[in-house]
Amino acid sequence: MRVLVYGFGAYRQFRGNITARIINSLPKSAGLVTEIFPVRFQRQQFIAALTRHRPDIVLGLGQSSRKKIDVETRARNRRRVRKSDELRAIFRDRPMSLPTTLKFHAGRSVRRSIDAGDYVCNYSMFLFLDAIGRAGGKVRFGFIHIPHDWDPDEAVELVRRVLRQCRRPS
Image 1 (tube, rainbow, N blue to C red):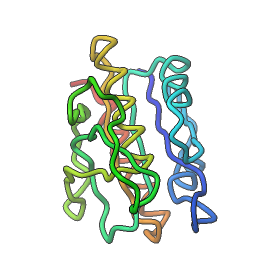
Image 2 (cartoon, one colour):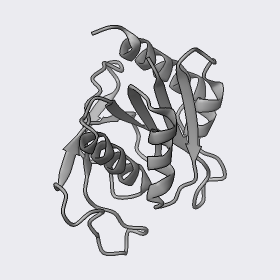
Image 3 (cartoon, rainbow, N blue to C red):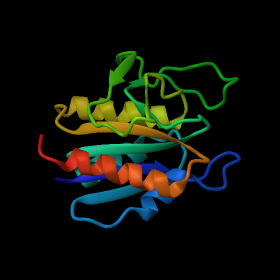
């Protein structure tokens, strides 16, 4: 089973990104590949990773300013660079939202969220889910938002726990 875990690099006022730190701390294992993307609305970087790695599972990690860890349950067909910008559709001819397809239990203190925002995390989610759906929908996809000030060791352990669950035969 091939698993792609991705996160992001530094952006805006953040000189680092907790997701990059988590990814760099994951132990190497057979079938696990990782990507740290620049925080850009650049479709090709996400699609190229899907094509290059041909994963069975994709787990995205995003940094947030929220107070709790959130497991995202859907991506919305919207984006904007700044809060002051008008919302725009990612694709005009696609659904308003797409559900995530990777089911796991991340712990009692982790919330489920129906709003991944409208920045690059949501953009990446929508692109991955759209590409997976157009290719027949066999790849399972999930996404976790982790607060930027969360304890990195706890975050790594949470991701490891989720990966163990996801790699078990269903």
